[in-house]
Length: 357
Image 1 (cartoon, rainbow, N blue to C red):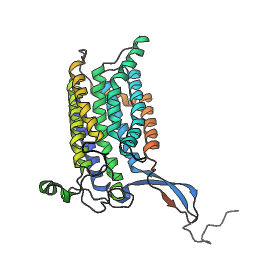
Image 2: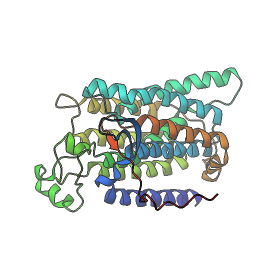
Image 3: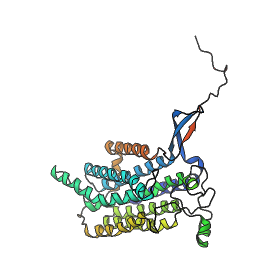
Image 4: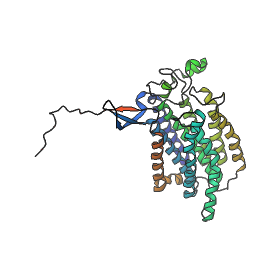
């Protein structure tokens, strides 16, 4: 019963967040969080560094997803130092890959790719677990179960990308096709649920020239589909079906990634089938082979009550906070936009209180 309560509460929280985000994040107001003055310009104002809601939401989504994965692994009583080491290795590969692959594929400096980061992380994850297990074996510490860790990582990834699509809404990136270019049934279904972006700094506006256009809400569809998939896979995980949880998480996410790119209007690289779509297809046999061939050792079913105790442990919680800060520092500083900041006094001269002597 506790497992169902956990999934139900998590689903309610994520759904509430998503409904709020779909309503407000396309607005111009929700793209920038703050502007930090850097240096004075010739007009007497200050050139500002923009801190974006994109970075805030992406960092938050990643931290929540990582916490979700830690809860699942703690519920199986996995050796925590080993788990933290695996997460550290995978983030160490995936974070640079998100920017490097985007530059190689899209030939742009100011962009990132979640799909590319995932592909590199997926290929590296089994090796990372093997490396950590070799170290754990050398120091006579409990080793990690390969499929258990991979299943938790897969759920964490799908949840993180689903929640991370809210960041795309705030920045106006990863945008769908204009509804007027879609089939009549699509237009009818999404006419009242489309996204309309305004503001010169939204990517759909400055890059796609789609200001005021009704766009297919592909980010919202991905958010809902991935979040539901993560929650369903979590139920499989908590019943001990690790292979099924791993398979469902990644098959749904990668098949949808392939088809969803045909519904997007932003540039995804040259060619009829993008590099990211090819990565998705290449990931499928890799996922199938692992889920079928990697064995799991029989043991007690996961306990979500035990898993939630991770929230009371200082090292994982401090690590997640540091991860959030790092991600916001990387993704929250806009390099594609700038601002001008000016300061002035509101109180008229002579209205200041007299100094007490």
